[in-house]
Image (tube, rainbow, N blue to C red; front, side, top):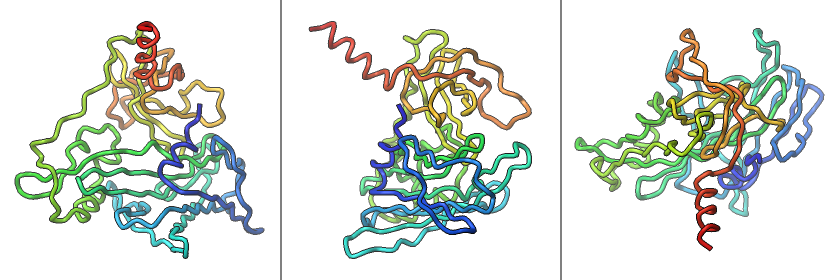
Length: 299
């Protein structure tokens, strides 16, 4: 089951998408899987309108590429109304990819980000974005990323889990660290000595061809993620997801099976030595399924 609508409702109050062409603007169709259309012209721009309640502890931003490796968080000003709703706009330009021949969203210009801070140092990062898979366009939202900031012995604000997170866009993102540190400033935060590394999911009960989805990132040109298996963590590209759904993706925490694990091409930049092929969701949230099984057996 696609959870895109559920994920969006947990982060945003509402979203409208408008297709802007040289002939004018029209509302995009609303579909449960976020499908917007296909075979768009490079002259088309997709406008995202996001609505949310005004909150002083939330920053909405987009990302701009700065240099070869860094990504800069640029705040997006919102327009408030008399009911307390704030509207944020994002224009997503399209371009034709010379390799695939498909029209795609411009990388790094396809998303609205937000980060919601809590006084205890915890925060959530959400992202609303336009994704294309073989010329088909979708409105998508990642599962919110939850983490916590700490203060180290030098008094600096740090996020130690960023170093352990396989999602490289957090680990190699100095601008995000600066944004978090600037928000908390001199506020009281947990000590770094209180940090407990995240426990990897238990895969001992899984079959040889099964795994648990660790994370999924719906990037502009399709999406990719990672699963935990008996042989270690393996990356998954959206083209390797076996699904009858129009939008190909995986959901963190779900149980999946796969047809094969192949060595990752050494010429491709990747932290994963394995790539999963033919990945298919077979259970949503396996921990809850196991708990329900034991509950039934105990009755």
